[in-house]
Length: 124
Image 1 (cartoon, rainbow, N blue to C red):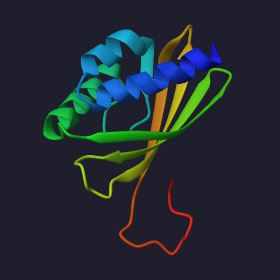
Image 2 (image 1 turned 90 degrees about the vertical axis):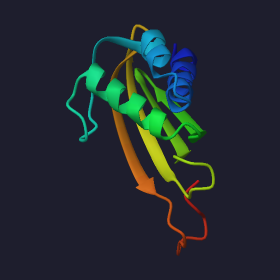
Image 3 (image 1 turned 180 degrees about the horizontal axis):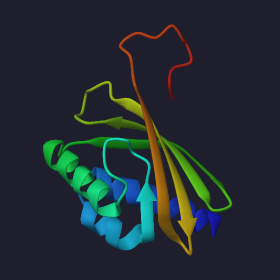
Image 4 (image 1 turned 60 degrees about the vertical axis):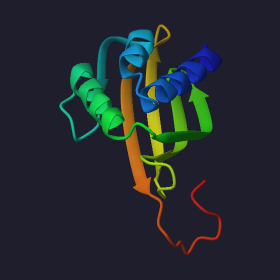
């Protein structure tokens, strides 16, 4: 189930980032879903509405998943997200918790990519 959950997490992000938020929710979100994004109240509906609004404002968003790690019911992705092509974007980590093959809990953390970094290894 771990590989299936990894694939589902990436597919969810890809669908949502290209504006197919309703499809992403229909395919991958489970009953009782909750999230921990501090910019929205904790329901599936509030996050979905926020994702749909972001997709409409940023129709050319670019999501590049760099890493996917799974352990038990958890999947973690590390991605480069650019709201508009050419933007520096942000490093984003999503932590998914799955039950019965569906996403039932989600955390997301982001850090803007700086123009200049002291770290020669980069963010990705």
